[in-house]
Image (cartoon, rainbow, N blue to C red; front, side):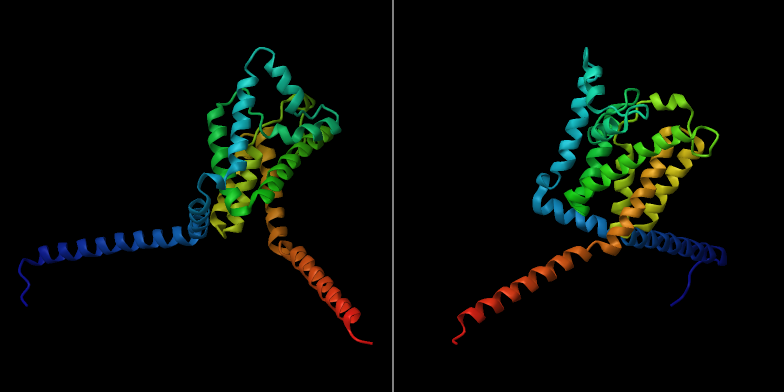
Length: 269
């Protein structure tokens, strides 16, 4: 075979071939990285949605509708007072009142933020978590991490602004509601469950950067929610199937004992 063309043309062809190979190599690396990071997540979501379709996310749907309902009601005449008495948490409130309101405070959106962002976040993240983690664990993570943020705010006001994580007294009267802490926590736990370590790290890093650049109550509560989510995810990894195995063993032992007792009674004497 003969090579036709000048040395310059052949060199240009060689450079183009190497450049094309490099681009293909980068593309293949990106695909492999995406599959390694999110392959398990996508497979789990696909399986859940194909089997149950819209019925796979009743919790996410309910949470989204609750946020929409609270958003509409609190902008009606007298609605803000009603919503405040039902689900608004502040550090200045008695602890028992805050604890009673915390479950509903998750669904009360902020007055000064667009509700559509909260609706989209909740439906997407709660829906993914509901399929990946299950309904029960999704609720546990959402409420536990929201409660952790609420208690952190009370402690911060109590210790005062002279401490690193303290707040001035006026923060006690700031309305502390919304699903953002739960959304952060669920994203972290889902990433842990699906072994998407880079995603989990990126979410936590983003929350820390937010708290540093915008040092306010919401930013620090997001960090607290993320750290609480890490603790929950680690405990689920270590002890998640411990108690089911124990209960299974107890049921098996009880069944064997009952069968042995039945045989003893029926045995001829």
